[in-house]
Length: 553
Image 1: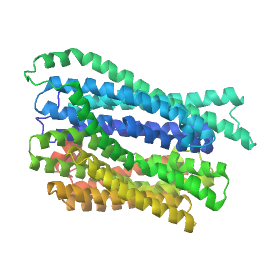
Image 2: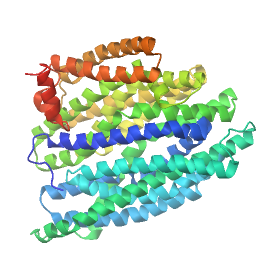
Image 3: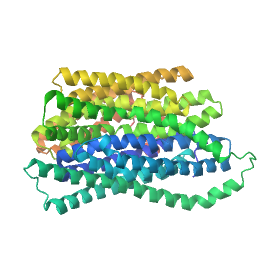
Image 4: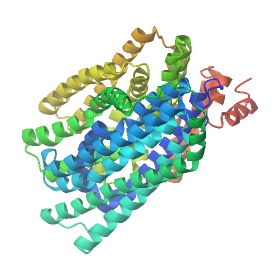
């Protein structure tokens, strides 16, 4: 459980571990969504997506921010070696989430009808117990993250996604078979809605099963480490012991801004859902079933794929909160600026080529992962292209959000997210009402929201720390290398498709070639140093390969 304090930029390694787990988890999530889409259909995804948006809001308000908030508070105590108080915070946080999580679960179950209508109410109620379980899981993850140890959280994320995938597909399949008698899609609208509802409920059960599996793993990890934790507490010679009343007040003061910031930051999806599913429905007088199906393609395919690269920024942000908190507690402001600059550069090295790759290979990537009709494939590919730029904006704004929280500027992200939300909502309503962009209006509003957040957060960081990001190797070199990579990937895909007539073989080969081209160009442009490359998990292997290819001296 020891941290990496003695290793320069050790937080990059920890963030890399967490990012690798996050990316693996999201890939697992993508791989099971294809079979699940075949089982529950686009309408089932529409019901699931609508319910999931509001489940996420309640989760954000009650429990989602717990790992970040708890890791910051405990990290501050660990920085001055107050191990007893750190563990008292941990115990008090558990009590906090038990009460708040139970209240939130009950509210979601009995108040589901306030958020969604019709079939989605049953789906939303299925999510209710998951909120209670997640709170406990969040405290355990935050405790280990405060020690700059991301391995436990990383493994739990992978286990969570595996259980989610298995139970989602299995439960949806069984519920549909039991209630409908077969997996055939009925022609009658009432029967189609019934089938989609049970499929979405099965998917929601998978979400809860995944969180439960992760919780059981984290409890086992804590049990294994308990004796060493107690020994360290016994060696603590600090006499001042904070009361649980003081700790609860501190947790409330820290968690509340985190909750508000994260909730407002993530309200965009729920607002977009309301604009499209309610305003668009009334304005255009469209069929609700068709509208829900199209929304399912947006959230279940295009948005899900575009969120994968952001996993690295999310992991980097989780690693940055305790790191920045400890650095600021030690009044090492230069060290904080260096770590922030390094973190920003690392996520740009990943997110910029991912954005270009998703734009260039949008159609073959969606075709690889999902079994769509021609019309559905056209829509999914077009939406993914429209969302590709938001990958860069969301990556940077997610990281800067967490850094500002680690600096103690917890109200700044709330204000910035509120401003961005107002602008994107107005834009979404105007685009939906006065253009024929349909779902592309939501994609544009989504990109606008992330872009505004990105700019406002960067300005806030500059003001807080006099921080200024280096431009050439952080943005320009990766940008140029990514553009060249995108051209190579497109040419490789089209050429291989003519030779093999297999989109799957062609896109996989094109992705592999694109990664090699990007890395080679980045090294030739001196966009990454040997020290930075070694900071990645298994970075020494990357350095060795680069030197063998004479791309690095």
